[in-house]
Structures are given as C-alpha cells and as structure tokens.
Length: 398
Image (cartoon, rainbow, N blue to C red; front, side, top):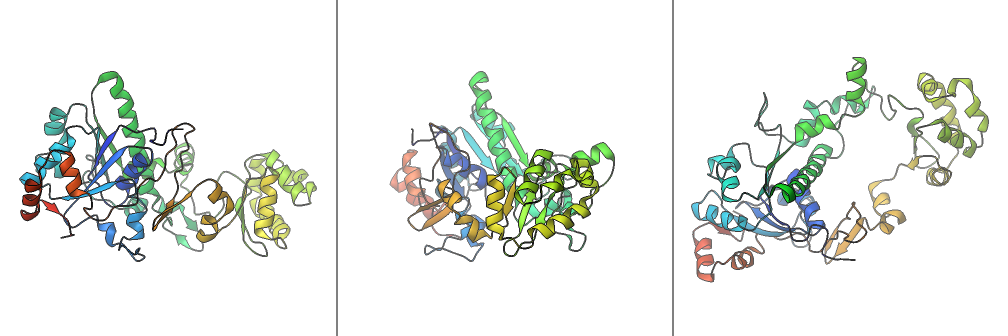
C-alpha cells in the first residue's frame, strides 16, 4: 500500500478560513495533496473559537479541520503579498478560497480576468454563502443562517420543542464535501482538456440539496412538511424508543426488517397485525405501533438490545453520547480516531484499498512554515526578512 495517498502530486493553495473551505482542503490533504494554508495577518478566526485549546494554544475548532497543512501568513492585499501568492500558484493545481464575492477581483486576482489567463490549468474553487449571483448573490452566510433560509430549521424539532437548529454545522460540512467533489471532477476533466476551470460550492445550494426527503415530498404532494421530532414522514417504525438505560433508535425500512424486529423482541405475532402489514399501514397507524414498541423496549438495556437487533439484521442504534461514540470499539477499529503528538482528531472516513488517506501532520501554528515555504519557492533570506519588516509576511497574529 502507498502511504502517499491517492491525491499525491496535487498542490493546493488554501486561502479559506472557518469551516467549509478548510474542511474541503483537509480532506484533500488527508488523501495526499500538498496543502499550503495562506492565512490573513490576523489568522483564521477559528484559532480563537475556544475553549478548549491545546497546550500550544490551538483551539479544538481550528484543529478539527486543519491537519495535513502548512501555514504561511500573508497580507495579499499588499502588492508584494500578491506577488508571493502568484509565485505560489505557478505550480499549483488548485486554489480554494471563501472570500466575499468580488474580493479577489478587487485585489486584482480575479479568476476570469487574471488567474485563468496566468495559470490556464489552475482549478479555482470558491466556497460562498449564497453563490455569486441571484437575489442573495454575494451575501455572507454562516451555517445556521443558511439552515434557516434553506428550510432546514423548519423541519428539525418536534411540535413540543418547535423549530430547532441542527446540532452540527451540517451545511458547512456538506459544502466542504461538495467542494471536494467539484474539485476532483475538474481535475478529472483536466486530463482530457488540459484546462482548469472555476468550481463554486455554496452553502445555500447545499442546504437545499440536503432537504431530502422533505423537498421531494413537497414537490410531489404540494404539502409542507411538519415537525415530527424523531419520527420519519415516510417510514415507520422510525423513532427513538426509551429503555431502562440508553434510548434505542429504530430505522426499519422494509417488512422483512419489521418481521425480524418483532421476532427479536419476542413478539413475532406483532408482524402479522393487519394494522402493520406494510410500511404505508405502519405510517398510518404510527401511534398504535409506537405504543406497542414502547412497551416492548421498556424493560430492556439499550446498548444490549440495540446490539442484538443489529446482529439480527434490524437497523437499530443505541443513542450514544459523543464520548461513548468516540470510544466505542467499532469507532476505534475503523480508525476513526487518530492521535499523534498532542493532536487528537476524527479519522479519515473514505477508505481506499491501495492508497489510503491518513493524518500525517498536526494542525499548524500560525504562519509556522512561512519562511520554509518562501525559500522553497525561490525567495532569499534577505527578501524574506524584508517581507516581515514590511508587513507582508506575518509570524505572529496581527
């Protein structure tokens, strides 16, 4: 097996900050791409999004999306900083940025007018809030703001709780994944055309894309989704059931699984109840079904029964806490926690058989590799010192 990764040989210049862009470039770095993270003089703002911080002062939020990168801090609005960026792009394959729409153009670094002409093989990826055009084009966007505009908050929660923000920044993370997909599509197409292109991944588009099955249901029926808590509008049983210990979530998608569920819980007769003969009837009679299942789960140990149901072919999950999930034997077996030096992070989710991804280097301190990166690109020590003195290269946050 190669330890270099499937994307070894690709060079990425990462101008992005916060989450969507950095999550994208970390995935590229996990699979072998060389990633140079160019931070502004004040640094990626997530360096300050703590506590917690590690002993080196790096926030967990920053640490979670910035491994396998080297950091250089430049003021690219400065003429000399712009020249350095252009030098770094000479042999780069990919540029990722998430500036406000029009910023690169204002600085004389727009893709259409400058970068595509100077570097015709360069793949430019822009991560935006709402996209560059349209009624909201160019507006800034954060994950929860997009959750609101894309309707995701409207379908999350129960009638009792009301609308609730999703507890993870799913839109940011999904946009980062879409950016990776788009970049690799462009890399593949470049093999044929020899040309780069611009890729856009917006939080808003991703938020709409993630609206499954609610958007599909609405577009077919014309009926607006309602808050259903833990249940599913199309499937039953699909809910969280209390036990003596940890609650258990069932996601039963077909009648065969329902039959196995009833047999495993010691009541095979329940599968023959005419009210529950198929999924549409189970959805129609959801309340009666939930009442019956609540009784069957009431005296069970959650982890034990969920494990038994999984082994019997029934989709079931004990509702783990984050510490329980992180330390579960299956998580550890799947190498979904990585540790090196004082760094701990989640593992590489996409597994390749010959060229697996890996965590090779810890998240960098601010501007830690700046001088080395400049030397590698032909700048001399005296030039580098002048960059520091002139406020072009930064080694401590502004």
